[in-house]
Length: 510
Image 1 (tube, one colour):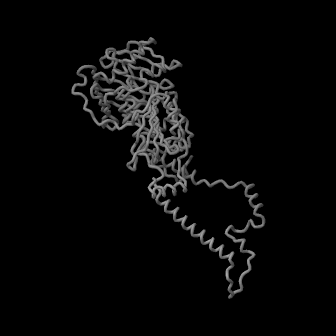
Image 2: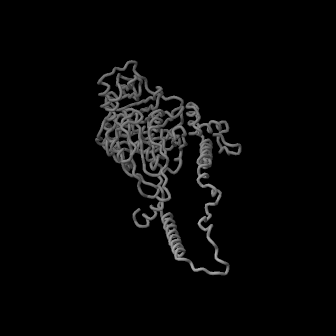
Image 3: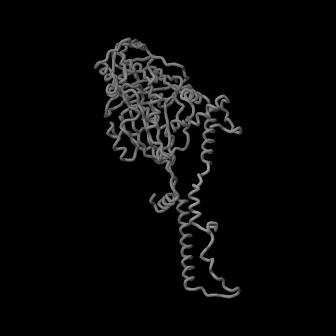
């Protein structure tokens, strides 16, 4: 849509106005769309103008006149009314033929008239009583929905907790994605060299299985560089990592504001279901070969390819302990999505001298089940859930309550999908979304608010549920997942339902 000449441009960049209008209309091509989203992440003025354009579009749509009744319907109704079609509805045709009493005369009402007057009085009294009851119920009704308290912060926290339990993952990456803190963008990501020839076979799987437990069972301390693809570039963050097998892992992640955010995860216990290494081996062909020296440690490279032969991930493992020194993932076009690893690291005895001080555990939902079989049970309970989403298997189900603005709790469901390389979280919370979360813009193509931060996060209202999608996968994975989930109109309470809810509240039933 385009704004009228009197529309204020909200302090945005004048040369971006046409692109912003096309974005609101969903008419911007993908390359231009990605460039604009990258610009929006750095330009508050254009974000303000985008919000203003969307509000203007909503006002235009809401002010559109209701469609007129079909002409043939109006003609039929007029024919049914006959000669009296022009008579106002408030006319009283039953009085038309009644004779009037002489002026000054009196006439006792007939029995028939007295009955009618009495009936009218009874009806009037009942109507007044009904109106009063309706008014009381209306005023006493509770709020339609309890607004969700920033569902995106809960979703990121949940997503970070899932990544932190990934044995072949990286807790520094989990911390960066969980806090959504990124540094300056760069044009390309760096990664260690790759051997010319990698050999497929069981040895590659064995290396990943060793790595699955080594990351939390081995003392580690060091500095990691995290590079995450963001629109048309990469955001860079650094993190200090200390792992003590007895107490857990502490990560200090530094963002672009030069401030640090501390995360702590306890040493993981036994988790039911398939491990990340098992998922990676089940969904990909694995190959391995000796790799380069990374941060002073000899490495073994393990590569994962999909069924079409495309490389989707690489891990550089310490040859002595199998600790992940570096990891890299790729999208459908072969571009790097994530590249993260140690620039300095100590592994083994003495690496975590002094231990890791235990902090308050992350407030997360409770693991309630694993595996695709959970989908059918959840669907029967009224949740939107499938055993596969965006090409990923359902691997975990987490449930619990999330605090709301009223001080109570709203039931929430977190379904986790993955294939050992990509992780996707879907969090559903009963309640209402009170507008755009901070740092989000409306994406008309995906029909969801999307984060401009380091982690792909999308949120929208569907019926009586707020749905949040978080993923470390590609844009295509995120778009496929969002399109596959429901986008029902928000559930609004009818007038009758509001009155009933009000009386239930008065009588102690709600």
